[in-house]
Image (cartoon, rainbow, N blue to C red; front, side):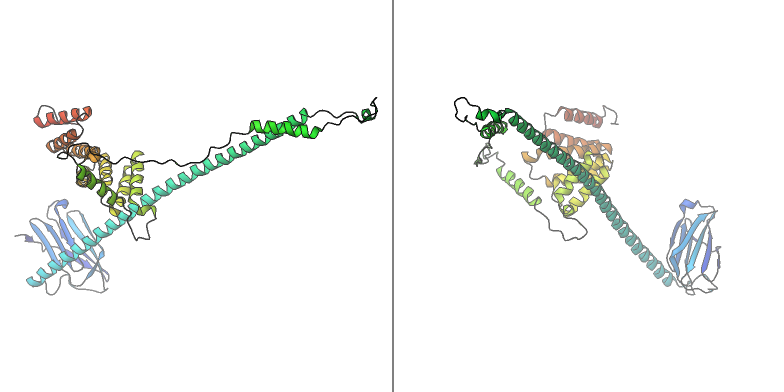
Length: 408
């Protein structure tokens, strides 16, 4: 049985109570401190300090400091006043002490659960905020690129219009040069034959030359529009019926079609893009390629929350966890992706290869080489011509057999 501590000391004011509990040579890190509004406990084997307070205190404002060979409680009274004693008048009642202890434990559990839920909610809000900020930055960058492209497009259009205008001016100048110069008016009446000379229509000639030059500069006429009919041959499985996987292929295609159906989410905090799991998955892929693995995990988390039937979301999130060295989460996501990649058909073979490799790598990082070797051998069955995969599997096999030191 523990030794009850009775040589503690305490003092009070109108608003606070200070309780000093000696540790009796026990290291501070061995002391287990527990408190609620009406209950104090310090357990440091083989000693135990436990009291039910005379009145309730504000546990949220109260503190406990460990140092100098003692635990010092600074308690704030809920109702100001002088207590004149620290413990309750019913402290000698064992049943009361037992019920108070049980109530204190229940209150502590509820408080811990509430704090855990608040932390989880704050974490989700932070993830959503981070993702929104990242998407906002990308949106601004995209808008800037579009504005730059639009400015270049306008400049190119203006340059083309200026060039066309200059060409037109050159054509007009050339046409004016081709027209014959007018004759001296006086020579019209100096014809020796007494007849009026024939007058040439210079304007008609000029317009004809100009029209010919314009026709030469014009581009060829556009092609006529038409429709091309395309027909597809039916999908045929050339294998014998006893070896055919037509039923599995059709089931896989049906599952993929169901997984890609739009999800109706009624959440005013989400934009239309954030309600699309496929869009979030592509965002996560972009973050992964840029090396922002935490942002990629956040995007994949939201995609999985909206639609948990997309194997690529879990497979890609496993790759992110592998980069972040969250090996247990990598194993969980790899296993979930393999569950969704059923039935096993050639269409999803390479996806299963990637999942096995990622999960096997995580097992090896945790020094679970036997489990890692199983995944690598499963990947080799699906991709037997992969030389790098063969070399990695051989190295892991040597480690399992003890002929090679553990992998770095």
